[in-house]
Length: 342
Image (cartoon, rainbow, N blue to C red; front, side, top):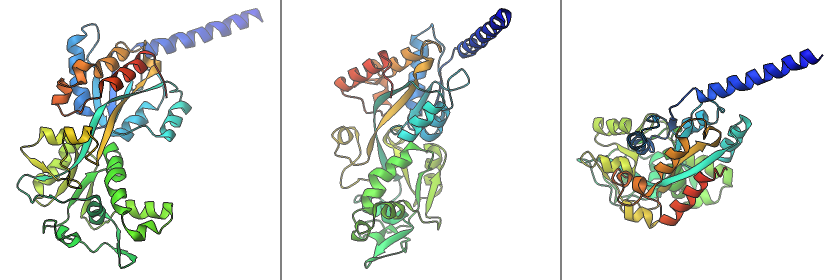
């Protein structure tokens, strides 16, 4: 009996040892997720490799916010990613899925802010009077008319409102895997939809269904890839309007121009002040269980939000990230240091 017990103990120790070795067998930080956060993380990864010779340069992939968070929540160990980039806040059901798979330490790190812009080719018409309600009317499957909901009859922007350009409605929006898509709906489409009396008269669930249901006649195209695919759509179709992150627009000013929203031009000042209505915070989510196992993970997270890397006058601000306020930065840095989990 004692021999059997000893054998069982030795086997258990062997399993634990193998598991620990499996976790420590990888020495490169693995990151995936938001295409909006991708260029920022790529810059940080390169600078991290240059400044921390003792660690390998992190590997950064895309896949969209939802895709990155799904990978993040698959479990703990060397075969799972260490950080998920996200252009939206993690949802409660995603936190639950993480914890059900053993990912119990989730460190939320806000890295800065971005705005969502509506852009056209530089040689296309200028949308100087765009409003959330116009965006809803352009993409909706059904629209309110004379007290009832009807199939969307609009084929040209000028039919929606005379102040808009007389050109075809061709709207390229992010696919459902993108955090940008959710913020686009929450900050533009749904508020625009809720301005109509017919929608206000509906119950909450029915209203949400109507507000988010899209026309299927080819005038709205969902882009599953990154912003370069949306840009390619604009290059191919002069009348197309695309939905981008402000940082992508800033890097491509020679090819695209932005619309105002509710009379406000999207830029760093209007987003920091809250004046521009379609803006959002950006995040990275760090797997706490991998800190101390994957070399450099905590140092990378701290470096990402350091003042020199992402503060005012930093390389990430030059790349289009809107920096955190100093007090908010200090609070988040403390959360990383203390491994504060959701």
